[in-house]
Image (cartoon, rainbow, N blue to C red):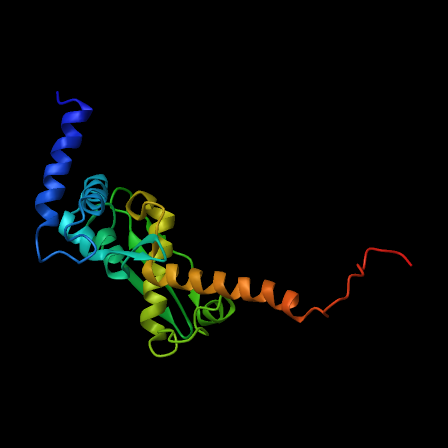
Length: 195
């Protein structure tokens, strides 16, 4: 049996060979550490390293899966029938049959009201404004994956979720800063002080 050092050296050699390719995304080209991470993730979920590299996006320093990868990984994992979507007027949920039990598994509803309340559809450049049905399906697949196949999601969010979370964090920070900026200059009194 190989020891840990030999396995690590083998992974480095594989990563070096892959990172020299020009058909992989630029974030991995000549970048052995990033390529090693992709190899480890591919091994952990039983996916092709190239598939992982093509679908793993870094949004503000955090890894996230493409929505199409999430759907493909769920469809090919062997635990579920192909993912289907129950689309109703302004809501959507992902559904699949669990192969081992035949049970229909239902993901949570994603609604247009939820998208508005969470700020997904109101941020500049949001695809929720122009493609709401597709975005509901993508979000429904991600929620289904986290609920029924967290080992595939590996605790990560979809690229659109990660973008929405970063936008929400920026908005929250701006809301915290705004009261400070608007406070009267030179007023050192505190509301907690009694006259």
